[in-house]
Length: 231
Image 1 (tube, helix red, strand yellow):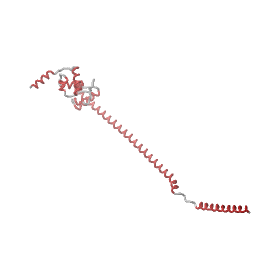
Image 2 (tube, rainbow, N blue to C red; image 1 turned 180 degrees about the vertical axis):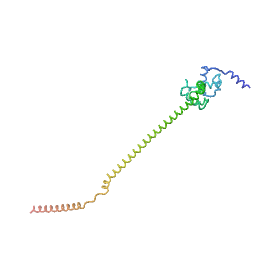
Image 3 (cartoon, rainbow, N blue to C red; image 1 turned 90 degrees about the vertical axis):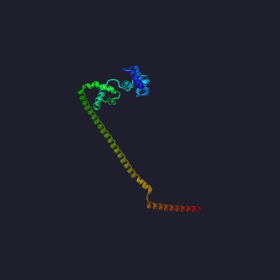
Image 4 (tube, helix red, strand yellow; image 1 turned 30 degrees about the vertical axis):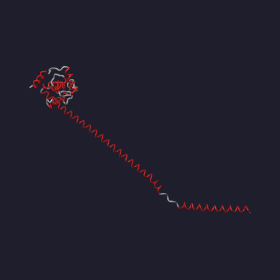
């Protein structure tokens, strides 16, 4: 019973209404120190007289550093239309596809700009779907064409390399064949010497006989002259 009374007193003490700059500063410092979450502890740790839900909404919708400021862009509007046609009023799910935009901001934008238009909004959504489908088909065709062109380039490179290697192999084979043809006679000459000519041997022998005969004649003449000198 005392716990309920204490909670009732705390609820009566919660501050309501617009946030002040000082409250924003205290909440930002709290998140820097403790991170997001544990919003019910903000009142005790940061000295704020705001309940946890109020602190969470204030941080998520206004104080978060990655929030986008300014009006919704035409591209973001087209995303909202497309995703709302798919998921309905699931604003948190839609917000995940729009970084920096909150579910509350998207919901308010939808209600302000599209909810009152009724049937015209449905027709615009159908047109948007058809336009997005055509764009996706066009992008797929472009991607397929790029892949086909890249495949052609790769195939040309492969064929070029094949012919280049084939030419190198042919040139190498021809060079090896010429080397064998030119070097084989030399090898034969070195390995198999020419057979000697019989006539050249006999010519040498005859030349030796002539030389021996001349030497004998010269010796006889010398001896005759020597004997004649004494007589």
